[in-house]
Image (cartoon, rainbow, N blue to C red; front, side, top):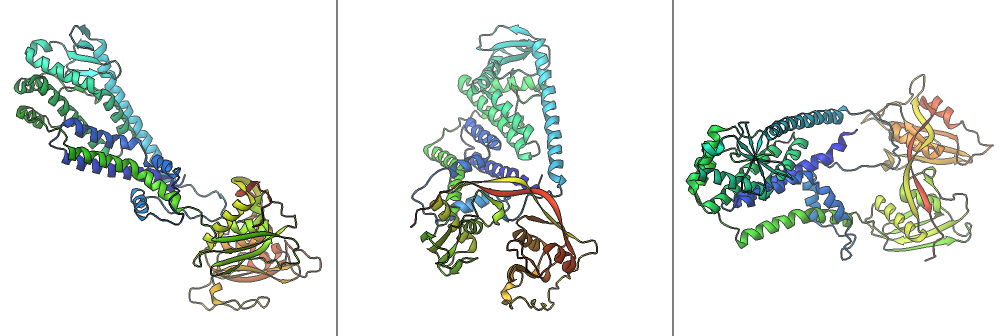
Length: 564
């Protein structure tokens, strides 16, 4: 596992926390309105923990917006994306990087184990409390009441409450009718039936699930407490509307608090629930009529709901627009009838605003996908067919953008269908020889050594780069100017047509230059050592055969392009 895998979870928790903060502000704006409205807001904040925004972002990514040009970058949507996903690290990919086995980071596994223990512990706690309530129901006796659910009288000294989700049961302690006046227990029964109509037990069970999964997030528990408070206040408001007897109802609740124990399970809706009983009694005694939502507050709730639902869709849509593949402004691609008629070139010719190349399809694919030819399967590289490309583009286009433009052109003209897959391929490990490395680390301020005599003096801008040449027939040369061994490994993979894994463990920057018998253009008359011996003799490095996972591009289908 890699710590980067934790970024989706971190983004989800951040989004849910931000959503809960918005919900808290809404409840403040709705403090004079009915409790069931605030309960609904807190309920949405809780359930947000179960709904990652990434699902809606993905859905937004499938929306086609034909009116938007590919170059358009909706800054608001991108800013929203960055704000909603601050823990997403930028993806930096190298097309020449294989899936090498690396040292495991223990942090994710440790966190997973801690989370699992927490889930198991809390789930066991809920189960033990549920068993206790279930036991009280089993030992109870039925009570005939004129209500739409079963009533059970139990010897357990638990407050009256509704137990069960789909087949709720009203659990009453023995003797409650003798300890409360008729008006008081009628108000209590009305309170419990309100819980049944609102399906508060189902909501409570879902909240228990949220608290179990996200037990480590304190905001989840705080939201749960707010939901219980608003749930009880909502039922209080309904009872007061039905009976109008605030004093009788408050006295009934206080008597139950004196005589019975509160239900130990949040999934049982009792009459004394709520963290601040004193404040609740004060609210009951005031018997203040809560205001219904006016048009302005309804509009506020609707606007917030639409914003929350549409924001991920906008982000997903923005990503599809900003990541749209760039294309050449004008492009011509034609098959060369005779390779002698048009001079071929190893690299494309680029000038500001123009791109031209005369080469084979395999070389075009290598450049477009930034891959060596041996990592592209399905292209007939032996067919002597060459193409000439002439295209215009933005003068400020970067190298990566030009590659994407060429890729889009090839897909359009050759009808290329491809996919990526990882295969176990033979390659080489670049390691330090038995006698140690002969490379000397280049100092930051040290003078650069002269170029080898077989290579023309390069411009200063070539510092930090590695490049090849053919100083003779059948002879290749590699020159590195203040480069790493990983860069050398990448270049060797080009010459050997196989992947080379850098396993030297060397982290410095080096100068070097050497000639060797060309692997790709061999010659029996060439006078040069092999790549294997020159690495050992001049650099103190060694190539050792090794197999490993390498991602390749598999071309499933392509066809001869129309000439235009």
